[in-house]
Length: 251
Image (cartoon, rainbow, N blue to C red):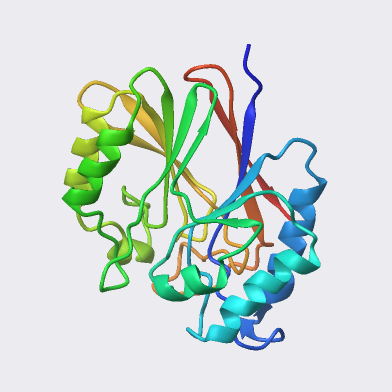
């Protein structure tokens, strides 16, 4: 029996150049630090995956603050990352270049592969190129189970953020349909902790969205507005083949 593998997902930090920068009245740097403290207090986390939107003001200093938060929190777990629509991939690569940060986009453990898929496009909305989907398909091992993690949500969630969701949803669903060993999809971007079905011709799997470390969106607003909820993160526990559970925590 293989050991369970537990991932902590964090997302949507929206940091500024200054540590006292406020995003809709929230001190997002302090929120990130609180989330990292909470993750460290979890007993069995093996790795952290950050699913994008590190920065709000697009400054180099915001990337440095992100790295500083992990250093201050003495985080030694491996930290994998993806770009969100706010991020500059070159700056992520430049500043998240040494331990604990890891640039690999495939995490393998026991009977599982965790696949980090880039959905950043030239607009706030997401797109996953057919070339990337083909490349991911080529590395999938049919004898293993897969969890896909990405920034943009691949199914509509029913509020304003859908205008900036994944544009090529049909192609992405076809990719999932063609890869029956994929068991779930996790995303950021929506600033809410949701579990929604992705309905495919032969099966249905869950999409899990991650609460933001910055603010949670008010789903009744037509534009970005905080609902006042605390920062949070999501845990995925990957056990024997096909067994995946997820929990959400707010701090």
